[in-house]
Length: 173
Image (tube, rainbow, N blue to C red; front, side):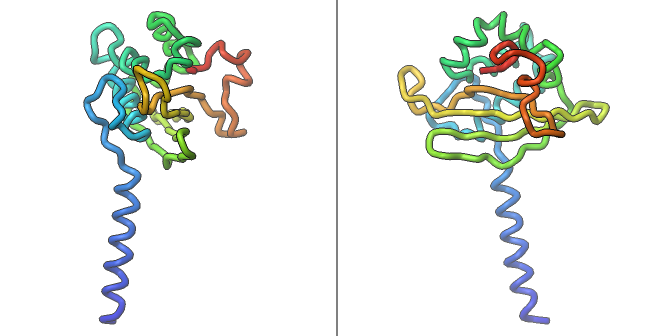
């Protein structure tokens, strides 16, 4: 039995490390910064969207827009248009949700993505895929920024936008 105790301690330590590696804190940043990791950028946006109703003038959506890549902004901006897009039925569940579950960050070079499930007060779930890239040009050089957010159809694992509208109409790119 004595030999089992060190193994149990090792297993518990590995499990704790794996769980804490999944947990990403959301710094209070409101703008891109090269020091932020992809997970932190997503966590900042999730926190901002969750608290959008508590901020004046759709402040949570504005913070999220700050982290949109330049290519994303060209497709979805300016900010008033972006606000309306997030308030449409496809993306409205991103605002003021109750809790969320985040999958692992999948990273390949200067690209990263994470699947996030948002859960409202009634227990309804909506799955989104955040896609980020590390920017190469000033003023955002070396900053992780969001290229797109797609709502996922859990039955087919495909973005719902592909089924509901032509590309670019409801995408947050």
